[in-house]
Length: 196
Image (cartoon, rainbow, N blue to C red; front, side):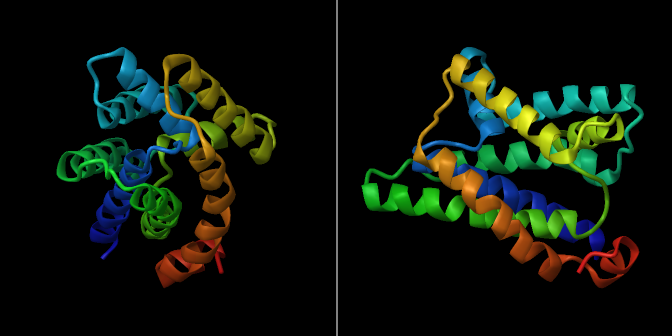
């Protein structure tokens, strides 16, 4: 049961990111960076996610951070799902549709997060970077803030899209994951981690 849920969760996560790209009103900080990287290279935005994830895996190995099947799957599946979403769907011409996609994007990402985190098969490489900093004495919130702001700043320089959608994602994603994660975590995983 864990492996199908892992892959469904990562695919849903990538689909949710794809919705925010199609909305065009601003992306989450890491994806501003991925989009900016795609603007400056032959990579697609999904390809940029895969390349950056692979580089972060190398960093995790160097820092002796634990890597699970979920970590490896995260590197590949989210980028592929995002690219597939952009390949299947055209950017809507309607402002109402674009606003709707931007608003529901982080909710869909949170559902995907709940599924893939809730199987307990390893953190994503971007989260691994944060936990590596935490193990070296940097508080999680500080590590997360520094990482996200650095990715955002680099993405802006590279030409990624920032807008009200970026702010909305940052405001919505925490409460949405807080809501969905305990509801989508497998009972045996919750028992092991003490999640509730």
